[in-house]
Length: 456
Image 1 (cartoon, helix red, strand yellow):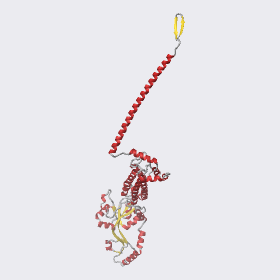
Image 2 (tube, rainbow, N blue to C red):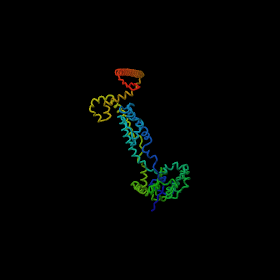
Image 3 (tube, rainbow, N blue to C red):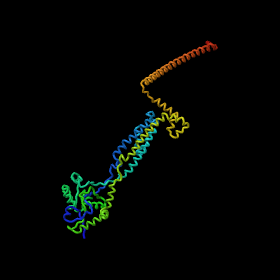
């Protein structure tokens, strides 16, 4: 006895007797796989666009601005601009630089804040950056893989099959002439059949070769045959795509009016109930390429959305709120708590816990704060400003009078000294003349013939 299987259709069923279907079938499409490259946007795929916007635009700049605001209001930080820029160099852009450096773990020179609240928020941001980088690197490996390129047709009614001439070059597809698939397409899609008839293939092996060398772009045929070919292809370079069309089944053909039809149907029904047909289908029609295809179809990782990363954003928001509470406590400490603590900290133990805390309790720090406040205090009351101006004007006039009196005093002093000097000189001259008069010098007389000379 010789058995053969047919695809059950209306024409064959009118000529011969067919058993009940033992294997479902239909029409599907097979395409070839082309090796591709890694996507140029693969490094952005671990997160969706909304997560990137929320992280790199909102979170970074909001946290950087919060750190600067906390540092600006902190008494141990910028203290609303009262701290000298030479002593503490920190600004809004330096805060952004700190945030970006911590986010990417860059070893660069940065200026750190001094306030308790701003430091606390910086540490919370460091934890946020750790979670971000850990989830990013863990998912990046799943997206940095080569992507297989192929024509992912949706089915027999795909627009590339219905309008193949709209592509450049034209989309070429075919089936085997005079096959069951060819007859079905001729009846259901006459324009499509007319276009594809010029690319008709002789057999399945010829169609397989033409698919691999890109002579045709798609091959339409019986689904089970194409699944078998794609599963056992040596290079796994073939793939079935799209939904099955014109569902039918395989049946055993017999002569018209054969008495074996009932027995065959009973045997097939028993094999279906026992699972023998499913085991044979899994053994003969499956292949190694199907398992590889299933692994590729399963995404190793999905893009991380905002809902998947919401816990990290909650952590960051909680850090901002706690930083605000610490800023309020810091102001309360400098206003009232420092005085109470200074009474008990006699031996400087607070400096061992925190240098800034110990510095705030010293007398030198209090003097420096008072000097800074006096130097940078500006009166905003108009009456106060007028009084200050009048006082400064009176002070300037008094200084001018003092200088004028000093010049007059110096002039009088120098004149009296000159007169005293002249009197001393006259007295010295008189004393000298008196001394000359009191002393006489004897005169010697020399008698020389013809001359008389007096020599003193």
